[in-house]
Length: 318
Ligand code: SAM
Image (cartoon, rainbow, N blue to C red; front, side):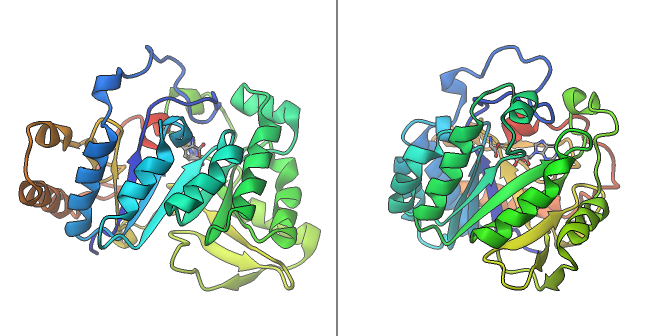
């Protein structure tokens, strides 16, 4: 399968400290000069697009902490051949940025919000910003994006009681509410013993509350999610079953972190530094050749071909 989807992490900084994501120990953040600058991200993206990428997602860290994100969005959207530009954010800073981002050309937004209870929010994120995240979600619904998704990482004993309430949001708002299976990625998340609440358990909770869910064919933006709808609902419900259910043969994505390291596969430790090429002034043809070689080696990696060790979602962006 050709690589058509690139996830770009813009920063390792985050304004939340999530129990399932942020590393236990972090020796400060990367220095400014280690991060790719806007102009370098755009050169890299243009080369990825020439190599076959059609869709880009901006993530982090928290991407809304990146300076002048609407400016970057505008530059990326001007690259010929890019069909879709999306963003994954915790929503805390989205209230004021939703409209400028839409105006700059951003197509879609995913907001990560795992609870609607302020005390649980504090427990999960270490922050009191739940209302801000909710306001950000509502602002993104008003801003006119082609789609807004709400991502909830379900954790047993932490937020699983809220599953019906989240499912309800897909009925009342034109939202795709997606229930994401928690998975262990690093030492911090491994400390959350017994937190896995499976997709089957989540679906049963929803059906116990509202009746049977009707499966609908996944749309072009649904990725690996299984998608359902309740009759009369304004939005949809999706389930993402983490690594357990991951189907390598259907994977069409690569990731680039905020330092320009390209990860062809989450299950492989090998990475390839595009930053060296960008900073050495490589021309676009050279960048495209380098990227095409990365796409070729991607096909050699499978989830059962060995462990990549810890994956720091907080800097790689999920
Ligand atoms: N700060 C942004 C946010 O919160 O959406 C973007 C980065 S965050 C790392 C992106 C996504 O990673 C979140 O939506 C979350 O679902 C996912 N994620 C991180 N760690 C995870 C884990 N242990 N299990 C499941 N999902 C995880």
